[in-house]
Amino acid sequence: MEQLLHYVWRHKIFPLRELRTTDGREVEVLNPGISNADAGPDFVGASVKIGGTVWVGNVEIHLKTSDWFRHHHDTDVSYENIVLHVAEEVDFPLFYPNGQEIPQLQLEVPAYVKDNYERLKDNDVRPRCRNVVTGLSKFLIHNWMTSLMLERFEERTSRILVRRELLDKNWEDTLFVTLARSFGFGLNGDAFEKWAQSIPMSAAGKHRDSLFQIEAMFFGQAGLLEEDGADDYYLKLQKEYRFLRQKFSLTPIAASAWKFLRLRPQNFPYIRIAQLAMLYYEQRLNLSKLVNANHVDEIKSLLFTHVSEYWQTHYTFGGKETKAQERKLSSSSMELVIVNAIAPMLFAYGKYKSDQSLCDRAFSWWEQLEPEDNRMVRDWVSAGVACESAADSQALIQLTRRYCQTRDCLRCKFGYEFIKQTPDLLREDEKS
Image 1 (cartoon, rainbow, N blue to C red):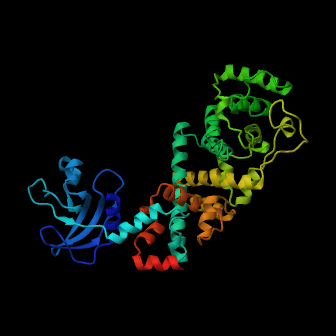
Image 2: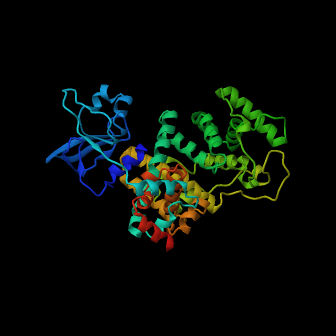
Image 3: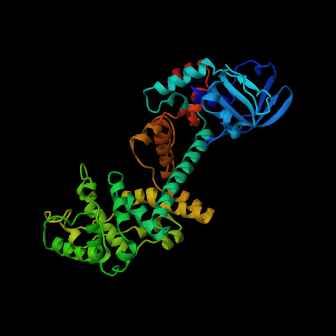
């Protein structure tokens, strides 16, 4: 497996013998280089001493030398300056354009590394590397968790910036769509994002002084005003939406986009849309207020919302009336919105503005919140990984989804600690 050979090269897990090129020159790997995820050689900026001469450049790795031709590297100028070709099986000579032979190193993956890797992939416990994780230092775990947290922020930033491009680079609209997506709380996230993107915020802004008109536009764009009348309030909203739809050439999303299965009534899309309508009407949250908020409690106060009179006694249009309640976001729901939307939004804006203080503040908001409690987090906690804040739980979610579930153990620092262990050390870990 070529990925495993890359792993051995990157971490310098070499056989306990001298490394030599196929023509007999001694090889010393001073720096394996940086793994290249883009087109071109596998490792860039490597430094290797070959026969007493230090060469700095790129390194290409294959299972067999003949793969060089199968991948058409012989006609690609990007590979003309490699200083070393590494293969598990050297079955063909390679040459530079000037006719000089390219140095080749035949490098096998140590048997114990292969065994550990297969063992790790096939392990049916969660997490698969728990036998090693329980013995790792707090310093190593902390460093990897910090990297994972940053990776999660960067990943969310990329999505937010793509969203911004789709919204004509408007940051306020991006904030609304990002916030709306978080109100789907996973199950309806995609539907809420599609719904929010369907609303022309410039049109909504013209009617921002009327909660009734905002509700008409919001529920209408959600495809929830397309049926026959449920009650008087529904009919009034429907009539108003038909006027707004014609005025602004609106196109609603399909009502079938919304999911209700296993949702408690307070989480129905109707209630979440009513809450967003009130937030928008009261202008409680905008980019300026977000940027100027210093503590997570300030964000919670901005997210404090309720619903209009009709939704205080209803969960659906025409449904049975209930005892009047404000239908506020619960504290736990607020924290999820901050974790999934508000903090990433501030981080993305900080990256865009090259303002590290905003990025640091976004980090601090995650650190101020309680950790999430789900199966992914509990699995790691049971393996001895401390989880003391939302920053930690987000790191563990990133670890599970991007590494464990995709079996990408070769890029994981915990996986590295498992794979590099000799058989004797692994047996000792299993006994303890």
